[in-house]
Amino acid sequence: MKNIFTLAILCCLSFAANAQVQNPNYNKALADSLGADNYGMKQYVLVILKSGSNTTTDKEELNQYFRGHMENIGRLAKEGKLVVAGPLGKNDKSYRGIFILDVKTVEEAQKLVETDPAVKAKIFDVELYLWYGSAALPTYLDTHSKILKENP
Image 1 (cartoon, rainbow, N blue to C red):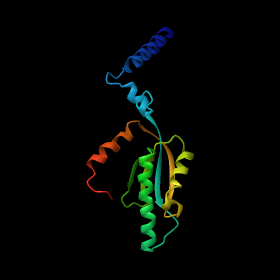
Image 2 (cartoon, rainbow, N blue to C red):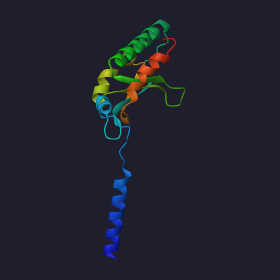
Image 3 (cartoon, one colour):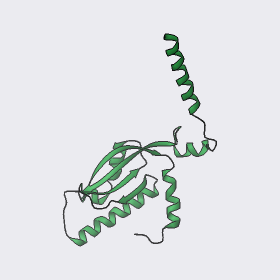
């Protein structure tokens, strides 16, 4: 019985070892330049923007905060720190939008979101989470710039 159990374990291990086949399209230089691990993935920080405690209704003041918010998004994208940003549809959690920041720690992300005028003014509060995703994610921005007809 002991020998059958040992044989079964060895068969499972050899099957698992054979299941991990190398990708014939693997590009080490590209993977390294993007900071990819063996699975083509890396650590990011997901930021959820939600309605903050500042509920001002002054249109000019809100326009100023949102103008600064958009400028900050553009700056962070140009610096390569922000790889995804966008609003969320109406929901019951007061979530307003997301960022995915190309940083390794929540502390680094917190410092970056504190540069946003709408966050500083408490128009938005933030929740930050470590997120594991494709290391190729930042490469979509170049393609997006080619399909963008009008700037918001």
